[in-house]
Image (cartoon, rainbow over all chains, first blue to last red; front, side, top):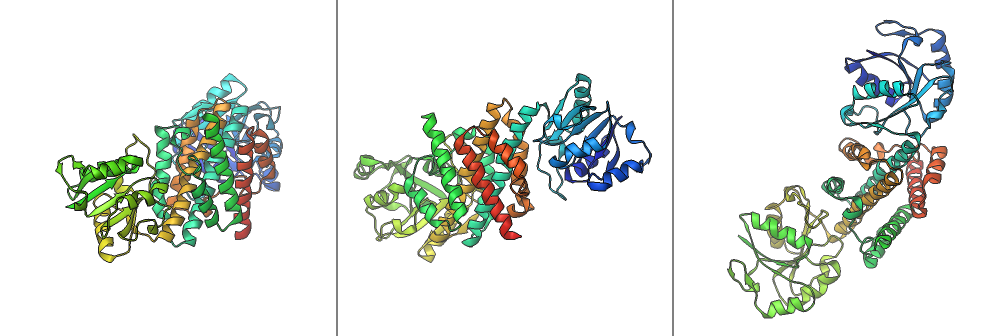
Length: 255
Length: 255
């Protein structure tokens, strides 16, 4: 049984608690509110587990699942030494954790929304640790909930997180712009969903470089001009222009 | 039996020929090369159908499946009057067709790549015609291959096509940028695929407006700055900046 203390009450922490609780190999000791006074109060109160009394010291792994900015202060406040402490952030270095602990990272690469269920089995978990034994423990923990576990360095994780911002945050915003264009012209956005699905499914057989189509790729200036005239939102026009420029440059380089 | 003449030998034409041939209700009369001399030669030669001899006049519907720029000239070269003639373009008006014919549009809203199979049943087909009887015939033709047929005006189709450029062409390019970032840092792009899938699947239950997450949405200036420093490609930096600006503006408006 791996004993885990989860610190934080946000979306990642909530999801992790739920999925760990379902396994046979992980026991979740407690969730301590991480914000402001709550943490120090909780520490003083020697908080209780749902199923009985535990001291915070008893855990095998301390998972700091709080916002990026809070990782440093919360992990310091815990005032632990020589325990395995990990954070769950894609963009924060392993070195944000206190030097007194055995540092690690446990980063589930997924977008979590409150109230939306996710299937952890398919979520890649990126782990990192300074010591071999700790890495093995994190691997065991990760494999108890996911079929896809990767050992990823802080440097690699930084770039993964950046790439994730593109393929998740930016893609979603692109959907949002498409949705607005449809709304303005009284066309159901649903018509576009099979196209969106095919754009994604193509990735299974083609690289995005080979899958590219459209007016920017073929430098169809007439269509590009017409599209720019159609766009009423000035910023959406800029988005169109810069992505068109970026596509053109990509294929100019490859010729 | 609906007799169809397909003009053009490109990807859309090839896919349409294949799928029509599989139905019981459509007979594909011929595919005439549309480029340059080939069309006029084919017209003079009174071309033959695979299964016998047909005159080009005998078709119920003439589908001009050629590049946007060629629609006008190819449809004029056919020199037909009073026949139902449609093009397959998302961005060209119905009025690009000659005034002597009964005009229409038959636009399958999907991204076609040579050699990649698509399931036509799920592809939305947008139809338009000037006459009610012609619209009914196009509806019958569309429903013989797809479960999702929409009557869409030229004006609506124009905006759908623009929205499609965003959700397909631009999204694919965003994947390409993500792929490049991964490659540069020796991380497999596959790690990101579950995230990409979840970004799309969220659309079933949330609007893209509600599904948005990430540093731009929460105006996390520190992370944004770090990401910009990580990006080596100047144009990718611009893409990051303008999409971040666009997300910020979207949520500033909604507050």
